[in-house]
Length: 125
Image 1 (cartoon, rainbow, N blue to C red):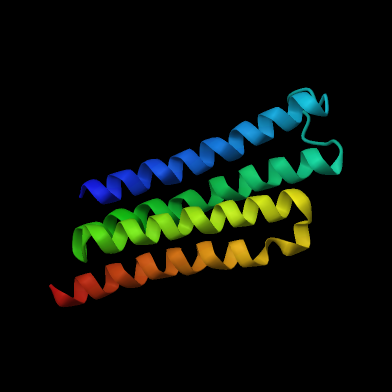
Image 2: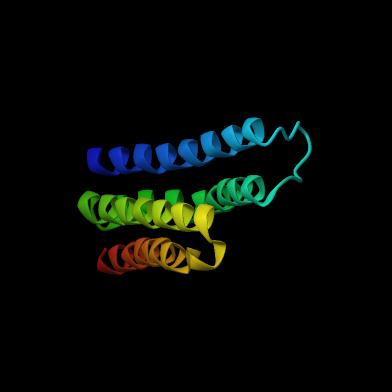
């Protein structure tokens, strides 16, 4: 399941990237902790990071269940697709929040695919 391990590292790298961007925005816009209020650019960075954190259980648990029950390649593909979706989501949200839907949809499809793959794998056993 080495491909799923790589995909998991990629998922975590995307989360670290959003966390870095949120921290950078905190410094750039001089928003001292624990404040969560600031200019729109800061709020967008914080919201991207928070939303990505909220998505982690929806991708990591089914990624590993899919790897176990259906196959490593299918699970890794879902994990990589999620990463692509999250990056598209983040870049769109940073620039113009209403344009984030495409990236969100890609990551949602990846999560649904991983859950569906788990179900298929379970049914085949």
